[in-house]
Length: 252
Image (cartoon, rainbow, N blue to C red):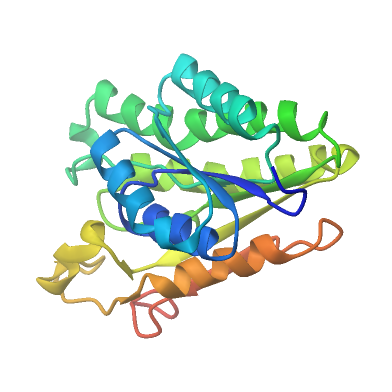
């Protein structure tokens, strides 16, 4: 491996934000490990990034499964010998039903993926980053606008994304002694399959249904690349990138 080659893991890399970030990192010369549940989508993304000349590794991963996470990081270390960047991006939501109608299983599925999965990935990244030469690395968490404000009927998702803010701060603090930097990107209405429904209108806090503006997902990818490009003695702690006219700033 060339000494200048940096190694990144992107979770949820099969579609949307994860795929866009993985391809952008490949374009910047990173070796990228694409992790996600659907192997065929990961392989398609790796194929798409092949023209960059950078190396890829596809590792089907379920971040709600601790054994699957351990296998992801073991395979990364075995293949590349180090880890410079972890983008904790994989996430899921629960059905948009009234809070009191959510099942325990629906709540637990979101917590296991969005919070526990991110924590376990962070733990494994720490183990590699603190013991490699040169030491250290960077972790970027996908917080979402929901780390600041909820949508209607989104208690599990919003709770986990608020929790990610606390985990980001703890990771940033606890990583200092190992030269591990940690920041969070909060994304609002990037145009992905997940936000396709916004073109038809989504529920608002006042009970109305409104179409919401979106933005090109490439703006997110470039923002993550910027955060990743900094030397380890500099860190973007929190960055918000959002569709300018989406209903977030203000009272609606």
